[in-house]
Image (cartoon, rainbow, N blue to C red; front, side):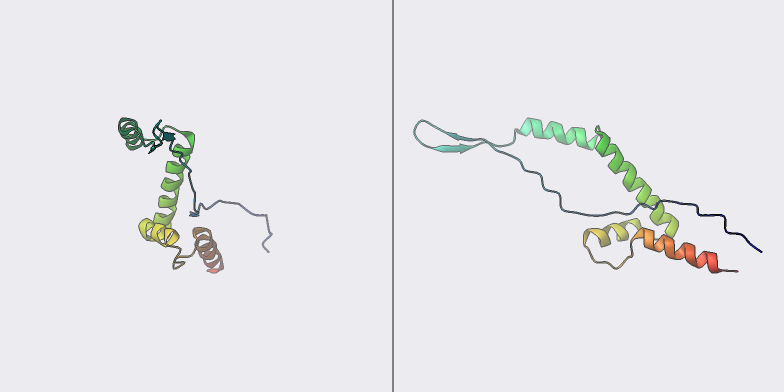
Length: 115
């Protein structure tokens, strides 16, 4: 008969949405007459930052994020799931679509039981 030869591992990437807060600090100045002034973002610097972001990613974290989303989209396509529906389900925390590793595991189990 057949002999068990071990396992072959594979990784399925899933998306986990979690809150992530960034604290910005604006300077507060007090003039000699007691008036308080609150600093703001420099418009020119802000526009420059937007140009850098829209032109692509420059950080390693940005590249990993882009690659992660590309991998997630590819996995959704292979499973026949709309990437945008899946993303919306995760962001909205609806839970209507099972996590991709669960779907992959279920499908692999179903395929292995078919004669």
